[in-house]
Image 1 (cartoon, rainbow, N blue to C red):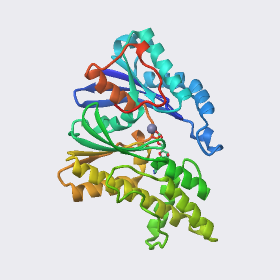
Image 2 (cartoon, rainbow, N blue to C red):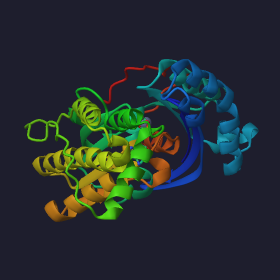
Image 3 (cartoon, rainbow, N blue to C red):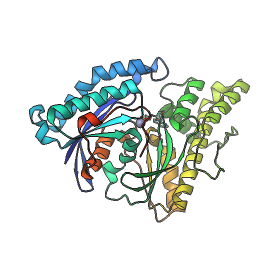
Image 4 (cartoon, helix red, strand yellow):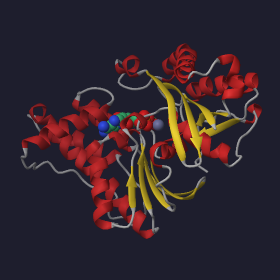
Length: 347
Ligand code: KG4
Ligand code: ZN
């Protein structure tokens, strides 16, 4: 089965074609046009600007994805089996570009269409490379710029949300910390880089950040207090600009510890056979390393997987992967039924 995936939820315009047979998935093309440079000067994504960029990019990105796969446009209706599109959550004006493009193609090529929840897409990024090894029940930590969520996945499309952030998402916390420290955009990669510089020096740090909600019995998170804590610390430190890498290190350590410890507790309590990590923040090597280590030490019978770097931040291969499984289980729609919904819930 061949699936075309389309992703335009936020500031990446992406298209991908994957081939699936049973639990064997192969990415035939994955094209991503990032708008990071466009939004950098504003310090964050500007919805109106993002939507206009998607309009400019969507057809060239689609064209490149199909060409790389060798699919001819006049044969696409035969070469492809379904189209999958991320239809929410996200920025509504951005989502509409991808959804309406996907609907037009489904109408023209008479193909079934699948609307994919963006978070479900991130979860399925793990199935691109590890589908045959993933066993249910799985506990999935999805951490991105817009979401932080712990999900119990009992089977395909059977989700129980165990916990969510009550305020900022983990990626958003990284982005806001970088803004306070004035070190660049997006924040996650720069904070991680600075933190690695400090770690390499092998020095101990006396900067201590709180571990929000770590001891709570529930699986919810809260990261906005960390940003406030950083602000108060640098306001009181006249030399903070000389210790930026140390602040980044402490800030990242706090996020990594809370995320990994709560994930391990959820996996233990729910008897997870697999622990999965996904979303843009899964590109963070400290988080990935810590979670992998904790799973092997504390849950030796469980497996741990996370996506390769190119499938951590927003991409369309993850949307196509979720679409493939939905198509495999005959959960497709016809084009009029799929709508963009910025508040779409994972279900
Ligand atoms: O999944 P994604 O591309 O978009 C959303 O669905 O939100 O995630 C983007 C987020 C940003 O907040 C970015 O700072 C964060 O992922 N991120 C990272 C790293 N790379 C990207 N956070 C921490 N460490 C990284 N290496
Ligand atoms: Zn995302």
